[in-house]
Image (cartoon, rainbow, N blue to C red; front, side):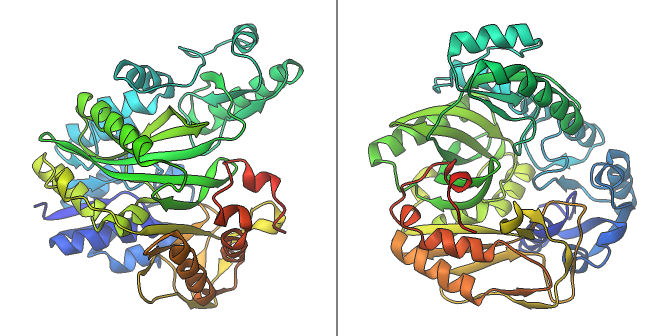
Length: 445
């Protein structure tokens, strides 16, 4: 196994990776910006390197600083986590050319699956149903106008290189198209350095369902699906597995087709294939070539340590897992705890945590990087922790999650904890009668 791994990330995912490395007996290197010097991931790692100032482009997105940290510490491999450079094909290529192992798929596959237009073509080629829309990037307003007439409104404009809801616009009539098209183009350029857009049919009442896969040179397997339909601004808040709306026949069809596609493209590592689900039909959305924020809900459900398996695949090229050994039972739910004020349109809530009591108990897990006295800065993503609970069935999982959220005490900042309680008690959630647009329409505050 690797002797030393550098984690090119921060916060709760850096802590999660450090824990997996320690269980493999691997030494860890934490990198940090100037404002993160006292963070938990820095405290838990065997050594740490400051790679720049608090602006992400000067630290966590600074490839030359990260490679200097590798040289300085003698790390053999880099784990990118999620976000930042995790799906940057140029970074993966530089790491590999430097003789360092990038813990993830090849730069070629990151590039192909990271481009949503190209990924859609690949998915279609290997038998996955795709959403009706542009085959290539839409460069001009006139081209967009013609395509939208052909598809029919409403449509969704998306950044080809994007994610996290940036550069994404819903257009319900032609009169709004020009303004939203130009706005999406500007946002795509600002956030991703690429203003290429594509347009596809917009679904009014979709569920967001994704498949977790693990793949090596020897085989590809799935770890089941996750339902991630509770979202705000196209970003997930609650994830659960299994999806409460699928029949077993639909589930098996989806999982088998996904494994077949991933196997055929020669993928290595952990990955997630995301789908839109509406009226009993699936449509390929995108593939994330990294570990997901919501991976713990699948770990709790299956008993498989996804990050440890990532490390093994990166080292050996093969997965030790076999499909017949995967036996998910019961129901699991994950709630993302963000330092945000839901009553003020999810406005970020930076500050110092003055009181911190995290929940525990039977089948309750907390992934985070917080502690009493830690500072939540305004410079990075607002996710600070995740609460994951498992029950014998969905009802018990909901009750256990509510019990755990009641135990979670955080003072000094505003969080989404109370919002999660309201969602989990809501009749529509209990009956699984919701879609990805539900939170935007429902008044919780």
